[in-house]
Amino acid sequence: MGRRSIDVEALCAGNRTALARAITLIESSRPQDRQDARDLLTGLPERTALRIGLSGTPGVGKSTFIEAFGLMLVAAGHRVAVLAVDPSSARSGGSILGDKTRMEQLSRAPEAFIRPSPSQSALGGVARRTREAIRLCEAAGHDIVLVETVGVGQSETMVADMTDLFVLLLAPGGGDELQGVKRGIMEIADLILVNKADGDLRATAVRTVADYAGALRLLRKRPHDPEGWPRAMPVSALDNSGLEEAWQAMQDLADWRRETGILVETRRKQAVQWMEREIEQGLRTRLNADSQVRALLSDLRVSVANGDIPAEAAADMALDRFLSAPVAPQTPDAP
Image (cartoon, rainbow, N blue to C red; front, top):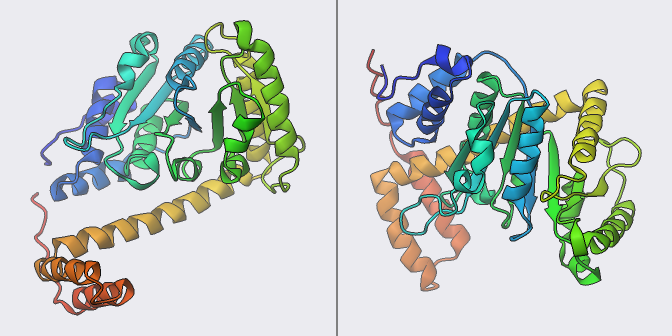
């Protein structure tokens, strides 16, 4: 029995407390918890949800949008899970923003589950265990999982690699705003939503949508898109305008990819990509756990910083030491 006892039956019945405890378990880095997490994930029923990634520039209103969008989905009979990955505190490693406090209405809905998790310096602005958390939410009966990213660096690519649809939320702006959006982000976006399309900003938002739609047409045709995709649309989380149209567009794209087999093939590729990332992370963890390699790395860092050894040569030396080290005996798990 592991340190944390997870009620799998309650989890699969949609109990939010059991789901929260299960996610806490899979986020743990303790060796015994990692084994318990693997056992838990292996025994879960196969349930699938529509996985939607969401990113956007700071101040665009991501949390406000997600709350309005989530409430609309809940009212339509869906069970929604939101995995909101917060920036981590440099001191404590904990979440800074606290999305539950920013989505107060949605967090009170019994059909919704919101989990803010610190990114803990994980590459791509998504927590390392976000993919496993998605599986837990699916097992708990949530048929729509929204993954909100920190929105820095590689976050858009990382979230696109673990979701079915990727939505980029932007604010109304002119040509300068369009120039500031990286081409790489545009290339992976399935749907661009220009938020705050209300009041005095409505006309500006409509013009911005037209600008992005024109830019999207200049991009190379992607094999996993039907005609007319990707696309841009105006929405307002303040007065809920455009939310139903955006949801219908997401369903249309997901249905087309499902019918053509693209959705299944994409998930197969994502699983392999995630395995490779786990191997890379696992190697780094084991390198740091080896006392001899750790001591060597300390010396190598000084030598590289002083310019005595090229970085590539130092990396080879560390890897050679790790690969030549005797394998430590494995301690059997406690029954």
